[in-house]
Amino acid sequence: MKSPNEWNSGVTAGLTTKNCYGETTPITSTGTAYPGVYPEQMRVVDMVIRGMSNPAYLLDITMLSAFRKDARPSIYSGDLNPQQRVNPTYSADCSHWCLPGLPDTWNELFYTTLFY
Image (cartoon, rainbow, N blue to C red; front, side, top):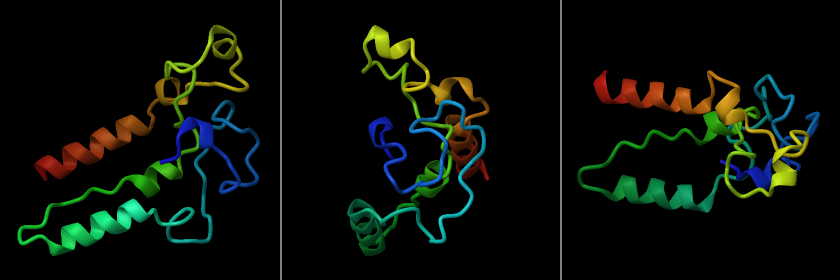
């Protein structure tokens, strides 16, 4: 998942803002199976899991998370000065205030994976 500083760096062209402020709908389709380039770290994880004698189960939420443009933390991330915090146009905290949000979705998937 992209960090708040990388949000909307060209991969998600056509969006109205450079952060999550005012964004209320998910990204629909990018025309690819994976948004952007499949990260090299994921290739390594896939290779390691396939090579295990007792493979672990990986619940990959990367694509789910990438399509939620309203789920990027910002003014509550702790990395902003007071002037940045008061300007939601450049720094809005959607993961806390656009609920039900992405962390809720992760929790639902994790719960389902554990118990069903």
